[in-house]
Image (cartoon, rainbow, N blue to C red; front, side):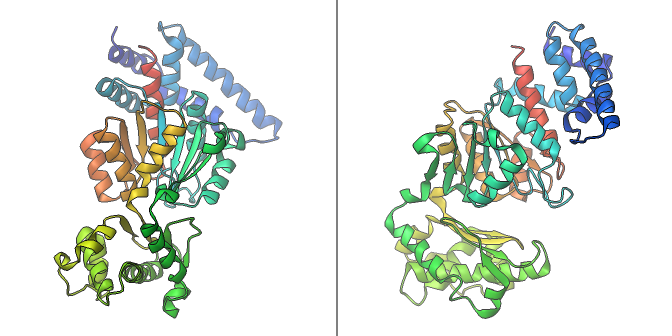
Length: 409
């Protein structure tokens, strides 16, 4: 009997919704000392085992099908099977953004939900490497991942962190390859630009801007963050001004010509409509045609990324050290030789990884419904894997079930 027919039978003949409710309760039951609560948990666990046994006894591959029913809704299971039918591959690594993807300030208090952490633990136990891919600093990410997933998992040898959007990779348990400073591979010309910008960015800032922002503690990228709640009008104001300021610093760092700031503004406004909009709203759009930017300067700008995140951050990074470069380095250390990954993210930097996965046939992409427009366009044009804000666990379960179904052969 084909897998589609077996799935129809599973979800038509069994009360899978109640089964999942028992499974979720047993999986994420909070640690308590109450005897009554523990007795309730034991009763639920026994009921779960009985319901699973009915499915085990009804299918040739009953153990797999009872796990499918316990993990995924009908829609999720058929989505997983559609993906398996399309790609005929199981996912052999996860590549996951954190902020507004695994966790969301919208309805999870900006913490990774327990359900999500539990599913990640299940992937780990199934031998699927996890790559956290973020713009945050290493120490920050390492700290809350250890807190959420445990020190043993993070240091298991199958867990990696691509930090600062690809400037470095941290993969514990791999000796001399544990920490790779990818920015050290850049030539001196580019590194000197970043050194100058970093040395000037706060000391040379206007007083009102300096009081409204701080420098994120990066190893390489230069990132201005607001001293106000992210998304607030005050944060929007200082980040918009900070973006213009960073563009000017970049222009001054790459040339002694007085027109360097105008050339930087013109080049990046032409490359990114969001940057152009900010410059226009700030009354700082240059009276310069992008074609006027000298060729030698354009060659330098071609290697440097200026990123704008509305009311959140303004950043200068290296286009040679994006998340794609970090992910490739992480997968190499993890010895994922023939990757087929699930990429989950919400921003332009995540989109680059998604496009890399699609163009190389190395994975699928998923995004929360509040992701940037370009990300959503890509995801909808590929496999339509869009999930609700704060519901990353639901998408991860779909991928987990894809792998369960792949095991049926």
